[in-house]
Length: 420
Ligand SMILES: [Zn+2]
Image (tube, rainbow, N blue to C red):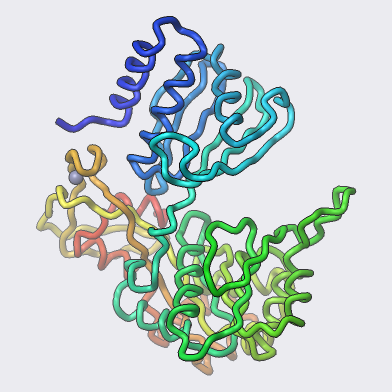
């Protein structure tokens, strides 16, 4: 018997009501515990408690997709927010300012993951979001990320470089940070000689032995709102750390020009720089760096490796093969697959048809002279894309089409992630 997420929620509601004979604060305490444990069981990455006119909607994000569990009466909004804020050591009486705090693992019975709880005032009360940090033992290596062979090999090669910028590009939720961390871990564990590694992060998600990790603010000027911040801005800290004899620098994410300039400068002066950048495709990220004001010759000489990735939900083994050709339109490109698999749903996948996620990627062939010249000439994204494919880049869409044929993911999931 497959139990859906909403059925689970209804059970938690019923059990909590039974536990607390009356509809009082005890009910909320019991229910929140069940929701937190249930979210951890279902490997949810986030829980939302969102108040609106109808009540407090409870949602789980699982494998990147938001699921609505149900709605609680609006009169409980205050108790729900207060209960969650207590866990994170936040001020329960302050309801008109956003707050954020961390919960160490083990503080909530049955939940062994670390989490971050944040609250924000909205029209109908406080919206509270719980974000789970993946447990330490789930920290992945390049091998365990799930990339296909040629891409895995090139990631290993990128980690063995001594200098240049190694960039992982993608939209938010595409797994780029996980890949960057895997590269960092490979550098710590697999380097022949010890290397001096510094990482600048906002926030630090996991402690990695062998890496000097520094928490920074991604805003380029952390003093812009008056009071001087305890945390230095990313670009300034990057410049300071250059005096501390680093060989490898990881920058959590490049978001603006000053960080980009400092990062590329490091890459050009004999350091290996690992970072992530927001972008829809490998060539699009080149265009976005140019828009930020980075000179084309800087990009051309500093970027050593550029990978663009997505995460797609992996079909559960309960999926069924359909022996039929299918035209799939992904990012404006029509691709034909020889066959595909349909999601079904079983008790293993909670009835969703999917279990876990797999990455898909493209790697831009930057060592090619023609491409280097096109970057220097600031050629349009479309031209760069054609050139890259001519020089052997298998585009993301094609790699995804192969994953559809292999039954790793479905045509519907590919469209959801990549767009039509
Ligand atoms: Zn299944």
